[in-house]
Image 1 (cartoon, helix red, strand yellow):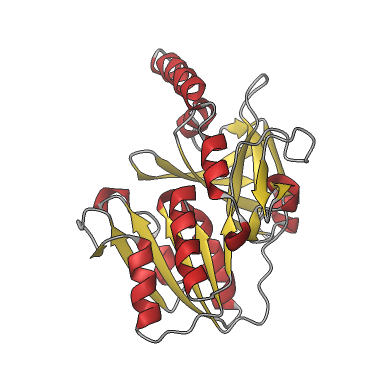
Image 2 (image 1 turned 180 degrees about the horizontal axis):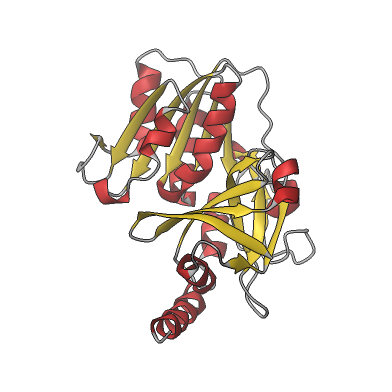
Length: 278
């Protein structure tokens, strides 16, 4: 059992949790993920590790309550225990010899982009973060991101906060302004990553994306998380979650992610009704 030590509500449907998981914390590296299960019979759900402290034995996760299992987890409070918290899984991010990096986060993807930026920034790499949100109310982790980079640009779709526009506009403005990036990291909705990669391909900038497709076991056995990369199928759980963004077939990834949308909606509605009933 894994005790919830801290819980914070970041916005209407986004939750920050710190969990006591010493074995995971000792081995965790940026880019890896865990799989949790709240109770017997519950779903196995992957979440990227947003932070870890090996000395304290804690792991931080940030998630949106968009499905049944995340709704159940989001309803849990400090002091309660999660049944399973398995990890770290996946390959750690590998960035060596970088000079200046742009880290792009979209929505909840900022929870993954933030530790990536912090790791690079702490390693002496110059980091520009560009974070995109729907509107001002959706903004999360602003203070944390500010301390993890040399410059932070917040973009909102409706212009209610920061700069009006998409992250691609913010990135291209910097490139056209003369900033030379050795690498771009893009983490967020597949459509956002697709267009960031289309932009960086135009300027020949190596680009890494972090993929979070449908996943069940996290060990490469089920094949649910397969993605087409460079014309070959890879498993995000063991070959990723980081991939060369210029080789990812985003159109297929988007189609696969939508396969069970209706079933997920029904399951979430049923779960939310049960939670309301207590």
